[in-house]
Image (tube, rainbow, N blue to C red; front, side):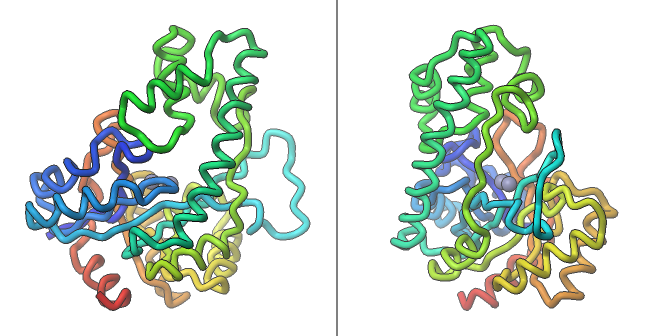
Length: 293
Ligand SMILES: [Zn+2]
Ligand SMILES: [Zn+2]
């Protein structure tokens, strides 16, 4: 039996409504499913209710974006064109209605609300005709709560400025591209504390996306997070190959961290299937036991 402890719904940037995920998980043969939308717990009640109906164990979760630069050896001055990487923290087994986490999500949403108009302004400066209202209309039509770059990308595709969302990122809005605006300013320690106060376990998502230069930087970074009371590492992920899975599992064991894993399913829009990481259900059971549930 397998589990999938990293998925997204239309409550953030996924393509599947939260209430439809558990039936898909069951069809994929999963015993347990976590919903980990970006910076929102809004999809959790609907997903939990549906999971109860189809008999899939449900893990209420969230994925927070934190400041990657905060974990660089000081003093950090990025070289031109340096791709810093991302630092995402999963909260698993959180209380969906925790007021502290809700306040943090509101802060993040506010920062994001300022970022998206900045991206649109840069696109306009480049001569592309796109408005914030067009992006907002698309998000509302999809029933989403959180506006992200994929939505801006979809509008660029609809208006003929890009061949695909990937193409829009490669040409305009991806890291290092002309309309890119940095985000990720949440201190990692604050994200971990908020997850703990909401009753959850803090897991470093897809360590490969931190873009560490080598194994030594990876170990340095994960140790810093462990000092901030990080609970575990996401070992299985669609971006990890067999070598990474082995390396992250060994690192977790060496540092006394838990292991987790999931597909990072975003719906039919991306070529990653729900349950495709084939994470053993024992991984879910071990996390549940530590969470005290
Ligand atoms: Zn992520
Ligand atoms: Zn994710």
